[in-house]
Length: 389
Image (tube, rainbow, N blue to C red; front, side):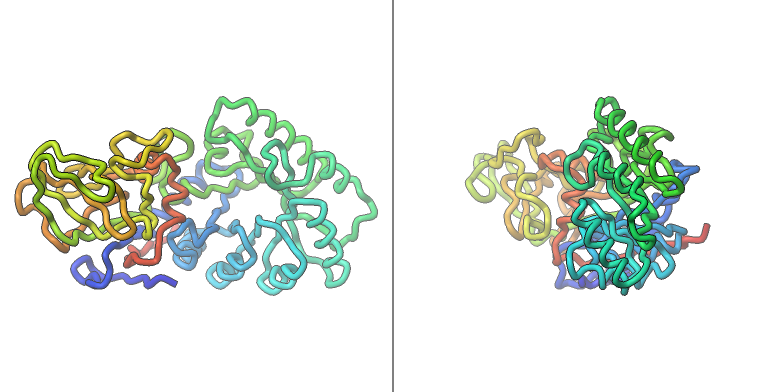
């Protein structure tokens, strides 16, 4: 696991070239915002992929203390880790039940999400052999990724011969286009899910991810499943004005170079300086999850912002120059007064001053990918949460 410390800025270990500041109070507050938006439905938290790259132990501990009692993860291993930090919560495992996983689910008291008739058969046999254990059913209402068909769901609901131990506690589906409010598939999926829900009397229902919560109360059912908005990210092309950033990523300046007009920067000589320039060479690269597609030039990408990403320091945006390399990236600091920045100082890559999703769009990707791709070379500094309601 990455080292995670709670030290002051001036105590940052010199062995780290980049740092993440994780605002756990913002995380707790964001969950409460989504909880209130979801009402009267309950609000779960999707914290797969090591808590969206932030750290599953910290995320689970914070949200559990804030009052969250339903969590969704991708794998049984993730669920077993979360169980330590959320002892009384329901933890749903979304990515399939295969032979051998049943034991882990029982030992860690995880709720498997059954997403095919094969999964249903495996879990039914496990219940016959080992006794009752809760499960969830996922119905595919139009995404064609995971889930039994609507017809299969109705067949299960009406099967009077199914073992008594096979007792779903949740029926769920997933919106394919929730981040596009006017997309006709949203209404189609809503109606298909309603039909399935009607066949499972007394079983809770869940359809909405972060985007679905914003579509309106008819999409919320009994339980919502926000993920990215808990961490301050946006859904779709909109700007998130509802929750606030949780993660600030910064890179340390290795050196400041002075270059002449007409000279080039970085691999491929893809950018030619139009003026005498001061360039901050920073300890961040694609090995740290700062993708090459953010490059200021020389890496064309569909829908990417032409001029690449920016960093931020001393109240100004700092354009990225040339290509992002494995360990280093160059930023233009010419417009800052001399001696404003020096080697050892930090520039913000995303956080309070540079929106996560703006950086993602500059690289033709999404905030989810940036967060979950953060590498192993960051010093992690957690700002604690009070967490009392």
